[in-house]
Length: 74
Image (cartoon, rainbow, N blue to C red; front, top):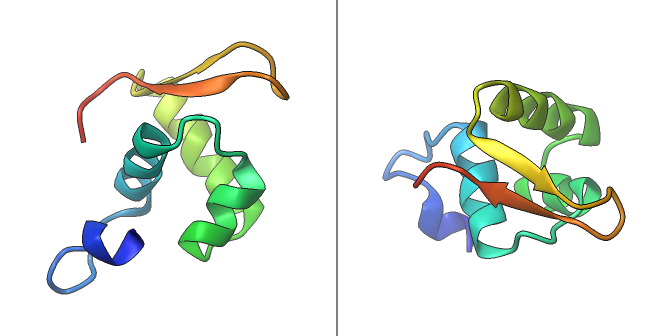
């Protein structure tokens, strides 16, 4: 779970946590991801936009029926 992904001091960055979660559960919706990471929906949307722009994350399929593909090992 989340606690297993955090570093010893709990300092892992949100983008890394998002990628790790989406690798484990690629069909996770933004509201579920926000709740899982204890962040706002808009914060997760910003992180996802950044990850997509960097080429580290891709959406496959539609918004409702698709899934996330992580393009880089975390």
